[in-house]
Image (cartoon, rainbow, N blue to C red):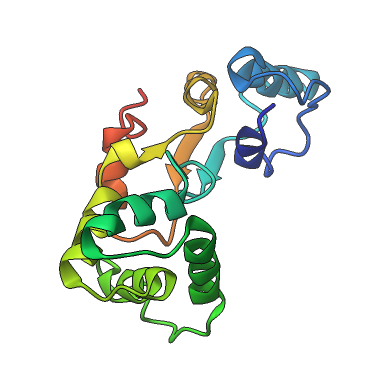
Length: 183
């Protein structure tokens, strides 16, 4: 099972995962949930709900952040290497933040600081282009097999919800990636 898909199921320890290297779409995860329920004398799924985090768990960047920052940044004079951009990105995230800065509205004040720290570029147009890039589903992907796993869980009667501190772009991203459309 891919590590990202395993992260989706960390809250389900009672379900046996003997074949962790198989793809989620072939795992029969929903069947195991139902089988675990049947073994316990229940007809309903073993779990009634699953809460998913967005960034880094359900949503993964389609290409490395440093690559994106560098390629967009070239037009704005960013000359840092991808390695140096990633070091700046990590430095920005390890800095102490006022509790409210990251979680205000669309997150622009927070991300403006992160992008500037990572790239040494404070050009407002550059920031806006980076910010808008990550506002579209093309910048993100689901982990391999996650779509099938979520459908299996939904078909087994498990309620699914995304709970996240992601900014206001999240609903559009879930729609772009057809996550909000899972019947």
